[in-house]
Length: 187
Image 1 (cartoon, rainbow, N blue to C red):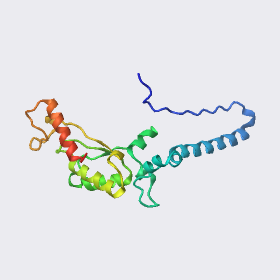
Image 2 (cartoon, rainbow, N blue to C red):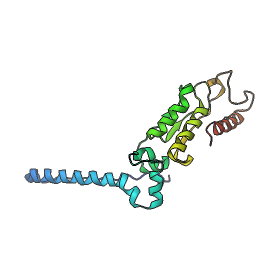
Image 3 (cartoon, helix red, strand yellow):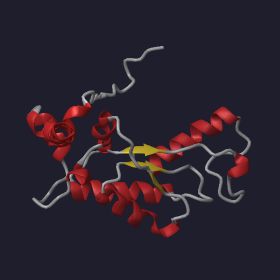
Image 4 (tube, rainbow, N blue to C red):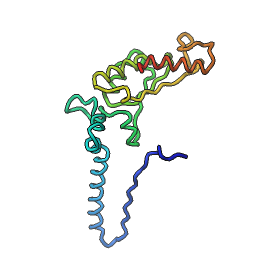
């Protein structure tokens, strides 16, 4: 398998072998923990400012004031590049509140948004309107967000509100569903 796309993890191991110097070892371990903490802080936040102005601009895009939180201005690709866990904002069952709630989620720092082309449980148009409003307000671009949608087969749809032709083949239903999602999500 190709392991080049797998995030590399750094492991730092410390072995304490000499029990005669417990106090000195404790002090050194304490210093090591402080140094490691600052190193991790630098790797997670400091590198964005020191690597180059283009990456720095990308990481800080959307920060319109000096009190803006860095997380709220980070792009989805920057989050993915850290190899760390992230949250996905789910949009099911939000109905008429979807636009407002998606906008609030983006303002709060969410960059991964989940929806589906299933009007029974999702308001994809509201997701599209919400992310667009937040992006305009924050100076974000479409590529700063990860929008995830899903195809739902006929048996999971509201029979009175199906986003594709019920008589089409499954592959055609999927294509139509994707087209509807792209339009709804304004992408």
